Length: 259
Ligand SMILES: [Zn+2]
Ligand SMILES: [Zn+2]
Image 1 (cartoon, rainbow, N blue to C red):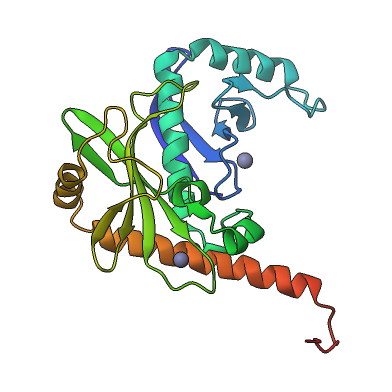
Image 2: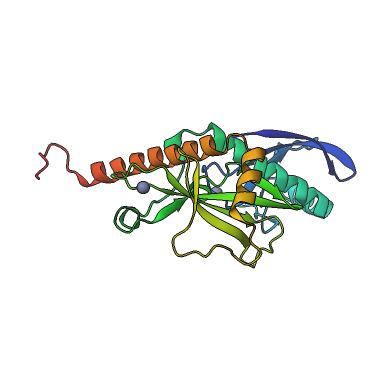
């Protein structure tokens, strides 16, 4: 599990160094994290909490003699946590999850692909759904920051280099509402061609013309097409690993495969 030293954390009027770790499952965004710190006269204290609910898990081990003291410190900890501290802890969580995902081997990324839809119905797979802790590409448009969301074809029998690319304002959207889309286009990342999505009109509400968006995203992201190619390859590689696991899981050992 990744560890992280966070210095200068205000706790009970003192600066305390916490050792922080997050849920060990790569790609899991459950929000579980654990804080370890030293209190003089006590064994190292561990506080398990959830960063989304801001709740501290109850002590399950009641065999500790110091139980009461620990409970007091746990309560002191909770009392010392203001919005600023929770925000800081959240940034820490995200940073650790990013590092964990970046360090993980490809096959460690948990994701269940929809094989049937992908291979029989041409369903595209969203990169950030599979790799949620990768830093997405962004583009600044007239004072707004739009996130680039890319969708890829993972059909093993298709050799296309097409990606659907959508520009979405995630930053200003409320958690309970659908973020505003500024357009979705079909791109060929090898030939650098842009097209409208079949069935989508030329403009969406609040949309920016395609050539304008294209210019902005290309100038602000010099590796834009290479990134899309990298995303497509990474997705295809993981897809192949899962596909193989599916096959070998079904096949009985020692038996010849019938055609
Ligand atoms: Zn988790
Ligand atoms: Zn394809």
